[in-house]
Every structure is written in C-alpha cells, then in structure tokens.
Length: 148
Image: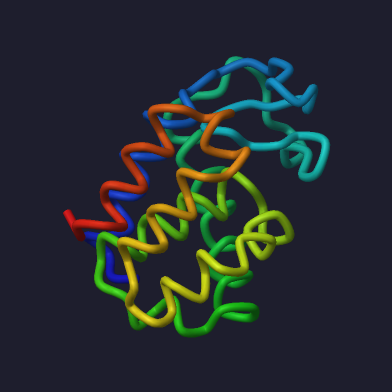
C-alpha cells in the first residue's frame, strides 16, 4: 500500500473506530484505547500514560496497521493487486474483524480476488458483520462495488 493510500486509510479508521485517549470497553468487552487498539491483545509499551496524545494514538494505529498488512500478505497475498480503494476496504475489514473472522468471508474474498466487486459488496452486506457495524459496512461495500 502506498503512503498516500495508507494515510487515507488512517483517516478512515480514525472515523470508523473513533479515537479515545483513555481506555474503555468496546462492544465485545475488550479493553480498548486509541483508534480501536485492543489492550487485552497488545498492552501499551512501558512508560506510556493516559490520556494518550494524538501522536501516541497514531503510533499504536501504525503498529496495528502493520500487523494487518502482514496478516493479509501472509493469508491473501493477492490483496496488494487490487486498486487503492479496494485495498483500503479489505484492510479496514481486517482491522475491524481480525484475520480469522475475515477469512470466514470465503465467497466474498473469492469475489474480490476474481474482480467481481459487485458480488463482493453483496456478500459484505449479507453478513452478520454488516448488521453489527451498519453505516461502516454500507460505505465499505459501496467502495468495494464502485471503486470510489
């Protein structure tokens, strides 16, 4: 993912996840901070204190995104061949769902890989995930379908 596209992804994730400078329990009960950073899975580095600054939120987000990129590279290496918009969609989904749950979207991922983006969007919207995240899923499905 190029630098400009990654910067746009960061903007989108900060909106989709929201930004919190002190810990809170997310809808699944996980202790979370920043832009969706799961503290149960990855505690803050030693010496960090609350409230976090925007710079520290960005450090966490960049680290979390590197993990997403690595996961996608290992499991779905074809994702890098998609255009910028669709790369952001699959990264956003992986960030939100985690790789294991994303891989459960077998037909949707097959449609993405084959360039059948309308079918992929339909699959995204037909999922339990879409009912949980609502407007986020609708926006991401539209991006997948139309490439904008």
